[in-house]
Image (tube, rainbow, N blue to C red; front, top):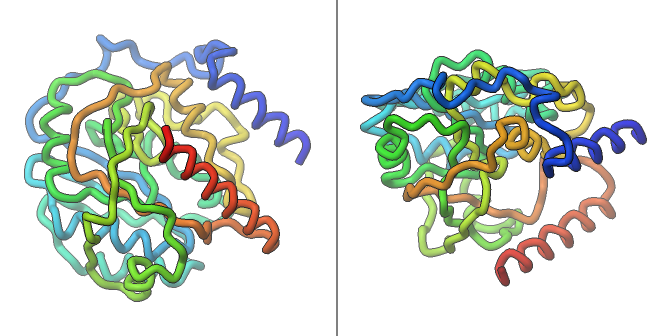
Length: 294
Protein backbone atom coordinates (compact mmCIF):
# COMPACT_ATOMS: atom_id res chain seq x y z
CA UNK A 1 0.00 0.00 0.00
CA UNK A 2 2.78 2.43 0.87
CA UNK A 3 4.59 1.68 -2.39
CA UNK A 4 1.40 2.28 -4.38
CA UNK A 5 0.87 5.58 -2.56
CA UNK A 6 4.41 6.65 -3.46
CA UNK A 7 3.86 5.68 -7.09
CA UNK A 8 0.62 7.61 -7.18
CA UNK A 9 2.34 10.67 -5.73
CA UNK A 10 5.16 10.38 -8.28
CA UNK A 11 2.84 10.24 -11.29
CA UNK A 12 0.70 13.00 -9.87
CA UNK A 13 3.82 15.19 -9.71
CA UNK A 14 5.06 14.02 -13.11
CA UNK A 15 1.72 14.97 -14.68
CA UNK A 16 2.33 18.54 -13.52
CA UNK A 17 5.29 18.64 -15.89
CA UNK A 18 8.08 17.90 -13.43
CA UNK A 19 9.19 14.92 -15.51
CA UNK A 20 9.48 14.85 -19.34
CA UNK A 21 6.60 12.80 -20.77
CA UNK A 22 8.85 11.33 -23.48
CA UNK A 23 10.67 9.33 -20.78
CA UNK A 24 7.51 7.23 -20.44
CA UNK A 25 6.01 7.52 -23.93
CA UNK A 26 8.32 7.99 -26.89
CA UNK A 27 5.89 6.93 -29.64
CA UNK A 28 3.57 9.91 -29.64
CA UNK A 29 3.11 10.62 -33.37
CA UNK A 30 4.01 14.15 -34.45
CA UNK A 31 1.20 16.34 -35.72
CA UNK A 32 2.19 15.89 -39.36
CA UNK A 33 1.96 12.10 -39.02
CA UNK A 34 -1.67 12.18 -37.84
CA UNK A 35 -4.36 11.85 -40.48
CA UNK A 36 -6.51 14.94 -41.02
CA UNK A 37 -9.65 12.96 -41.74
CA UNK A 38 -12.74 14.49 -43.33
CA UNK A 39 -16.13 13.28 -44.44
CA UNK A 40 -18.19 10.84 -42.39
CA UNK A 41 -16.02 10.16 -39.38
CA UNK A 42 -15.94 7.16 -37.06
CA UNK A 43 -16.11 7.81 -33.33
CA UNK A 44 -15.66 5.24 -30.58
CA UNK A 45 -17.12 6.14 -27.18
CA UNK A 46 -15.48 4.22 -24.32
CA UNK A 47 -17.35 3.97 -21.03
CA UNK A 48 -17.06 1.89 -17.83
CA UNK A 49 -19.87 0.72 -15.58
CA UNK A 50 -19.82 -1.01 -12.20
CA UNK A 51 -23.11 -0.82 -10.28
CA UNK A 52 -23.98 2.43 -12.05
CA UNK A 53 -26.67 1.07 -14.37
CA UNK A 54 -29.02 3.90 -13.35
CA UNK A 55 -26.54 6.38 -14.90
CA UNK A 56 -25.70 4.19 -17.88
CA UNK A 57 -29.43 4.08 -18.66
CA UNK A 58 -29.36 7.78 -19.48
CA UNK A 59 -26.13 7.57 -21.46
CA UNK A 60 -27.32 4.77 -23.73
CA UNK A 61 -30.78 6.34 -23.98
CA UNK A 62 -29.23 9.56 -25.28
CA UNK A 63 -27.90 7.66 -28.30
CA UNK A 64 -31.33 6.16 -28.96
CA UNK A 65 -33.17 9.46 -28.54
CA UNK A 66 -30.59 11.64 -30.34
CA UNK A 67 -28.87 9.31 -32.84
CA UNK A 68 -25.98 10.73 -34.86
CA UNK A 69 -26.57 11.48 -38.53
CA UNK A 70 -23.17 12.82 -39.61
CA UNK A 71 -20.81 10.25 -38.06
CA UNK A 72 -20.80 6.59 -37.04
CA UNK A 73 -20.54 5.73 -33.35
CA UNK A 74 -19.28 2.56 -31.73
CA UNK A 75 -20.55 2.61 -28.15
CA UNK A 76 -18.12 0.53 -26.08
CA UNK A 77 -19.03 -0.33 -22.50
CA UNK A 78 -16.66 -2.22 -20.22
CA UNK A 79 -18.55 -4.05 -17.50
CA UNK A 80 -18.46 -7.15 -15.30
CA UNK A 81 -21.18 -9.82 -15.64
CA UNK A 82 -21.23 -10.07 -11.82
CA UNK A 83 -23.05 -6.73 -11.94
CA UNK A 84 -26.39 -8.25 -12.90
CA UNK A 85 -28.27 -4.94 -13.26
CA UNK A 86 -25.77 -3.65 -15.79
CA UNK A 87 -25.84 -7.00 -17.58
CA UNK A 88 -29.64 -6.78 -17.92
CA UNK A 89 -29.46 -3.18 -19.07
CA UNK A 90 -26.97 -4.01 -21.82
CA UNK A 91 -29.12 -6.93 -22.96
CA UNK A 92 -32.08 -4.53 -23.17
CA UNK A 93 -30.25 -1.96 -25.30
CA UNK A 94 -28.75 -4.64 -27.53
CA UNK A 95 -32.28 -5.22 -28.86
CA UNK A 96 -32.54 -1.61 -30.06
CA UNK A 97 -31.19 -1.00 -33.55
CA UNK A 98 -30.08 2.63 -33.83
CA UNK A 99 -28.93 4.08 -37.18
CA UNK A 100 -25.30 5.16 -36.97
CA UNK A 101 -24.71 3.36 -33.66
CA UNK A 102 -23.00 0.00 -33.03
CA UNK A 103 -23.26 -1.44 -29.53
CA UNK A 104 -20.02 -3.01 -28.25
CA UNK A 105 -20.25 -4.66 -24.82
CA UNK A 106 -16.88 -5.79 -23.41
CA UNK A 107 -16.94 -7.92 -20.25
CA UNK A 108 -13.97 -7.83 -17.89
CA UNK A 109 -13.12 -9.52 -14.60
CA UNK A 110 -14.06 -7.03 -11.92
CA UNK A 111 -10.42 -6.62 -10.81
CA UNK A 112 -9.59 -5.33 -14.32
CA UNK A 113 -12.76 -3.26 -14.56
CA UNK A 114 -11.86 -1.55 -11.29
CA UNK A 115 -8.75 -0.02 -12.90
CA UNK A 116 -10.36 2.18 -15.55
CA UNK A 117 -7.16 2.65 -17.56
CA UNK A 118 -6.95 -1.09 -18.33
CA UNK A 119 -10.09 -1.03 -20.44
CA UNK A 120 -9.26 2.36 -21.89
CA UNK A 121 -5.83 1.13 -22.92
CA UNK A 122 -7.23 -1.92 -24.68
CA UNK A 123 -9.83 0.13 -26.48
CA UNK A 124 -7.24 2.72 -27.54
CA UNK A 125 -4.80 0.18 -28.96
CA UNK A 126 -7.51 -1.79 -30.76
CA UNK A 127 -9.73 1.00 -32.08
CA UNK A 128 -10.37 1.51 -35.78
CA UNK A 129 -12.07 4.86 -35.16
CA UNK A 130 -10.91 8.29 -36.30
CA UNK A 131 -11.50 9.66 -32.79
CA UNK A 132 -12.06 8.08 -29.38
CA UNK A 133 -14.15 9.71 -26.65
CA UNK A 134 -13.11 8.37 -23.24
CA UNK A 135 -15.97 9.09 -20.86
CA UNK A 136 -17.88 7.96 -17.77
CA UNK A 137 -21.32 6.40 -17.71
CA UNK A 138 -22.97 9.45 -16.12
CA UNK A 139 -22.46 11.58 -19.25
CA UNK A 140 -25.04 12.01 -22.05
CA UNK A 141 -24.84 13.00 -25.71
CA UNK A 142 -28.06 14.92 -26.21
CA UNK A 143 -29.45 16.92 -29.11
CA UNK A 144 -26.84 18.05 -31.63
CA UNK A 145 -23.86 16.85 -29.61
CA UNK A 146 -22.41 14.20 -31.93
CA UNK A 147 -23.37 15.84 -35.23
CA UNK A 148 -21.74 19.14 -34.28
CA UNK A 149 -18.73 17.19 -33.02
CA UNK A 150 -18.51 15.56 -36.46
CA UNK A 151 -18.32 19.03 -37.99
CA UNK A 152 -15.72 20.50 -35.65
CA UNK A 153 -13.42 17.46 -35.98
CA UNK A 154 -13.17 17.76 -39.76
CA UNK A 155 -9.50 17.85 -40.78
CA UNK A 156 -8.14 18.21 -37.24
CA UNK A 157 -4.90 16.64 -36.05
CA UNK A 158 -5.02 17.59 -32.35
CA UNK A 159 -3.95 14.84 -29.97
CA UNK A 160 -6.78 15.71 -27.60
CA UNK A 161 -9.88 17.93 -27.60
CA UNK A 162 -12.71 18.45 -25.11
CA UNK A 163 -16.12 20.18 -24.96
CA UNK A 164 -15.67 23.75 -23.84
CA UNK A 165 -18.86 23.47 -21.80
CA UNK A 166 -20.99 20.78 -20.21
CA UNK A 167 -24.28 20.92 -18.38
CA UNK A 168 -24.38 19.31 -14.94
CA UNK A 169 -26.85 18.74 -12.12
CA UNK A 170 -26.39 19.54 -8.47
CA UNK A 171 -25.12 16.62 -6.38
CA UNK A 172 -28.08 14.23 -6.39
CA UNK A 173 -28.89 11.85 -3.53
CA UNK A 174 -29.45 8.20 -4.43
CA UNK A 175 -33.20 8.52 -3.81
CA UNK A 176 -33.56 11.40 -6.29
CA UNK A 177 -36.36 10.73 -8.76
CA UNK A 178 -33.96 11.04 -11.71
CA UNK A 179 -32.00 8.08 -10.37
CA UNK A 180 -34.86 5.95 -9.06
CA UNK A 181 -36.63 6.24 -12.41
CA UNK A 182 -33.80 4.17 -13.90
CA UNK A 183 -34.21 1.28 -11.50
CA UNK A 184 -35.12 -1.06 -14.37
CA UNK A 185 -34.11 -1.12 -18.05
CA UNK A 186 -35.93 1.52 -20.08
CA UNK A 187 -35.26 4.47 -22.37
CA UNK A 188 -35.20 7.72 -20.42
CA UNK A 189 -34.37 11.37 -20.97
CA UNK A 190 -33.60 14.10 -18.45
CA UNK A 191 -35.24 17.43 -17.67
CA UNK A 192 -32.81 19.91 -19.22
CA UNK A 193 -33.80 22.75 -16.87
CA UNK A 194 -32.22 20.85 -13.95
CA UNK A 195 -28.75 21.29 -15.46
CA UNK A 196 -26.46 24.33 -15.33
CA UNK A 197 -23.46 25.22 -17.48
CA UNK A 198 -19.93 24.36 -16.36
CA UNK A 199 -16.80 25.29 -18.31
CA UNK A 200 -13.95 22.80 -17.82
CA UNK A 201 -10.41 24.07 -18.30
CA UNK A 202 -8.92 20.81 -19.61
CA UNK A 203 -9.83 17.40 -20.98
CA UNK A 204 -10.92 15.80 -17.72
CA UNK A 205 -11.69 12.08 -17.31
CA UNK A 206 -15.18 12.00 -18.92
CA UNK A 207 -14.35 14.63 -21.55
CA UNK A 208 -11.26 13.23 -23.29
CA UNK A 209 -11.66 13.04 -27.08
CA UNK A 210 -8.40 11.70 -28.52
CA UNK A 211 -7.19 11.34 -32.10
CA UNK A 212 -7.44 7.74 -33.30
CA UNK A 213 -3.88 7.64 -34.64
CA UNK A 214 -2.60 8.82 -31.27
CA UNK A 215 -4.66 6.17 -29.45
CA UNK A 216 -3.37 3.35 -31.64
CA UNK A 217 0.22 4.53 -31.16
CA UNK A 218 0.33 5.11 -27.41
CA UNK A 219 -2.72 3.44 -25.87
CA UNK A 220 -3.83 4.79 -22.51
CA UNK A 221 -0.96 4.94 -20.00
CA UNK A 222 0.21 1.65 -21.54
CA UNK A 223 3.82 1.76 -20.26
CA UNK A 224 2.91 2.68 -16.68
CA UNK A 225 2.44 -0.60 -14.87
CA UNK A 226 0.72 1.03 -11.90
CA UNK A 227 -2.20 2.03 -14.14
CA UNK A 228 -2.40 -1.38 -15.84
CA UNK A 229 -2.50 -3.38 -12.60
CA UNK A 230 -5.81 -5.06 -11.59
CA UNK A 231 -7.11 -4.09 -8.16
CA UNK A 232 -9.60 -5.51 -5.67
CA UNK A 233 -11.56 -2.28 -5.20
CA UNK A 234 -12.52 0.38 -7.72
CA UNK A 235 -9.43 2.57 -8.01
CA UNK A 236 -9.71 6.31 -7.67
CA UNK A 237 -9.43 7.70 -11.20
CA UNK A 238 -6.33 9.90 -11.43
CA UNK A 239 -4.98 8.47 -14.67
CA UNK A 240 -6.65 11.05 -16.92
CA UNK A 241 -4.07 13.60 -15.72
CA UNK A 242 -1.28 11.19 -16.60
CA UNK A 243 -2.84 10.56 -20.02
CA UNK A 244 -2.85 14.30 -20.77
CA UNK A 245 0.77 14.51 -19.66
CA UNK A 246 1.77 11.62 -21.95
CA UNK A 247 -0.08 13.26 -24.85
CA UNK A 248 1.68 16.55 -23.98
CA UNK A 249 -1.65 18.34 -24.15
CA UNK A 250 -4.33 19.52 -21.74
CA UNK A 251 -6.70 19.34 -24.70
CA UNK A 252 -8.06 21.93 -27.11
CA UNK A 253 -11.59 23.17 -26.32
CA UNK A 254 -14.25 22.71 -29.01
CA UNK A 255 -17.74 24.18 -29.09
CA UNK A 256 -20.37 21.43 -29.10
CA UNK A 257 -23.87 21.39 -27.57
CA UNK A 258 -25.72 18.68 -25.74
CA UNK A 259 -23.06 17.44 -23.29
CA UNK A 260 -24.94 16.65 -20.08
CA UNK A 261 -23.67 14.95 -16.93
CA UNK A 262 -25.44 13.74 -13.79
CA UNK A 263 -23.54 14.63 -10.63
CA UNK A 264 -24.26 12.51 -7.59
CA UNK A 265 -23.35 12.21 -3.93
CA UNK A 266 -23.21 8.46 -3.45
CA UNK A 267 -20.24 6.76 -5.07
CA UNK A 268 -21.69 3.29 -5.41
CA UNK A 269 -18.67 1.87 -7.19
CA UNK A 270 -16.42 2.38 -4.16
CA UNK A 271 -16.37 0.03 -1.21
CA UNK A 272 -15.33 0.59 2.37
CA UNK A 273 -16.64 1.56 5.78
CA UNK A 274 -19.57 3.87 6.38
CA UNK A 275 -17.14 6.38 7.86
CA UNK A 276 -15.12 6.42 4.63
CA UNK A 277 -18.31 6.84 2.62
CA UNK A 278 -19.38 9.80 4.78
CA UNK A 279 -15.95 11.43 4.37
CA UNK A 280 -16.11 11.03 0.58
CA UNK A 281 -19.61 12.53 0.55
CA UNK A 282 -18.49 15.57 2.56
CA UNK A 283 -15.49 16.06 0.26
CA UNK A 284 -17.65 15.81 -2.87
CA UNK A 285 -20.05 18.43 -1.53
CA UNK A 286 -17.13 20.70 -0.58
CA UNK A 287 -15.56 20.40 -4.05
CA UNK A 288 -18.93 21.10 -5.67
CA UNK A 289 -19.30 24.30 -3.64
CA UNK A 290 -15.82 25.39 -4.65
CA UNK A 291 -16.61 24.86 -8.33
CA UNK A 292 -19.86 26.79 -8.03
CA UNK A 293 -17.99 29.82 -6.64
CA UNK A 294 -15.26 29.82 -9.30
